[in-house]
Length: 93
Image (cartoon, rainbow, N blue to C red):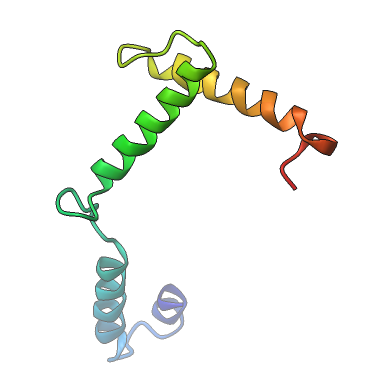
């Protein structure tokens, strides 16, 4: 909307205020990741990774901390498909 206002009325004295407000709203909407403390996103990612690694190992797949990311995800996708296919009608619904 600001761009339209600038095109329609470039001499509008409120444009600077609109630009400042927009810049502030954009900065407030971009939140940096939490990297420490109890809500650490790194901790959450690690917990999910370990959980997935254990689930794949329980499927007797050769997964450890040295497994390449691509192979790890391919294993996850294959196991997910396997279990979805075993559900009635082949889905989780």
